[in-house]
Length: 243
Image (cartoon, rainbow, N blue to C red; front, side, top):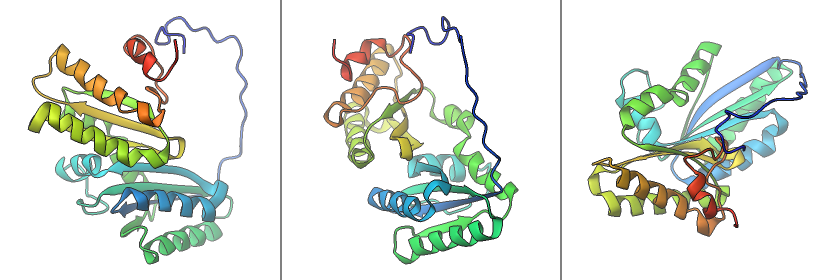
C-alpha cells in the first residue's frame, strides 16, 4: 500500500495468467445456528470439494435479516432468524458429476446437523438472486448510515469471540442507538464490519474506530484485510504494526 489511496501508484508491468472457464458451477445458501457450525461447514466443504470450492461467504444474521428479509426487495431464499447464512459455490469440469457431489456434500452437512437449512440454486438466475443479497452494498449503506465501514482480518477461530466482544463493547458505549452489521470472506480471514451510532459526531466516529481496532490486538489481527491503509487508517496502523 502506497499510503496515497491509489493516486500515486504506477503499474510498470503486469502478468496475466488465463485458465479455462469452468464447465459447471453450483451455488447454495445454507443456514447455521452457531459460528462453530460455520467453521465445521467450511472444513467439511473443503475436504469434500477440494479445489472445486470457489466461494464461501458468510453473512451474520444482522446482514441477512436487514437485506434479505426486512428490506422487502427480495424473496428470501431461506427464512430469517438463524445465526449465520453461508453462500457456498463450487466450480468444476463435469456438470452432472459435480452437481451430484455438491448435493451430497450439502446433504451430509444437514444430516450431521452442521447446517439447519439449505437451498440449492436450480438455475443461473436463482444463483444470481442469492448473490444479489450478498452484493447489495448500496442498500446496506443506505440502511446503516451514518456509520463507519471496516475490513479487518483475524484468524477464523477468533472471529466469533471478536464480533461478540465488539457488539458488547459498542452497546455499552452507545446504547440502543448502536447498529452493527457483519459479513465476510471467511476463507481468507476477512471480515467486513459496519458500525454506527447516534449522534454521529467526529467523537463518535473516533470511538467506533477505537473499539473495532483495539479489539483486534488480542487476536493479532490487521486493521485492513483488502482495502489498504490510505490516509484514514494511517493513525491506527500502530495497532498491528511496530514503529
